[in-house]
Image (cartoon, rainbow, N blue to C red):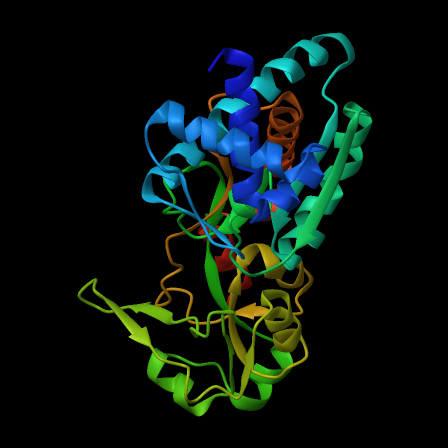
Length: 318
């Protein structure tokens, strides 16, 4: 198999794996289904292993096929990036960049950074999905993802944006009516607003004990209000509905305005969460993706709400 045949065969294999059938791959590639099947069979013969199991209805990857698919994607991405690199030197970064982010962060932090990005790189087109579920960047075709927490997937590269400090907040009117809690135990006499993640887990509240250990306060069965979107917890607290644990960056404007107050600041453990931007681990990063990545990281560094020190909360304690 010469080099040109090898490239056609690899393209056929990758497209068939993505599309789930030779016929669907053929439509994308503009060739016949028989040609795709022949290309994949030739690739298997050249490699000496079966890459796909075929039935009359489905295709499934063998273990060798799955491993080869991962390597083939890297090789094809490198070829695409090499072409993009040359083009970018002449006309600047061009093309579509797909981003996945949470709804709250997307509206509050990402959207304000887009005008300057598109002004700086007019050849870019940006597509954003505001989705709080965890997505598979490679499978779902995203170039960048912005998520909180720790990213365990070793196929992804992560660039830190900021720490995600948490705080307990309530409105002055609520605290005037129900009193200011002086200890975590006092929360049992308060209306609590808690967050349930899309996977079903309720966000725990953590507190520091006198001996330095961390204890967990389970709100799952005593919360008055349970919500899934983090920005709605902030709004519910502003509306006087109870005590909520929220990200400082979501609540900061309301703390500055006085619409919210911090409670149990010294006892509450702010967590060790981190907000990151991550992208598939590729041999080369396309210029359109690199330009978007670097611009957004610069914009997020300048966003003061993402970098509020915990000491600054002292001025807003009830």
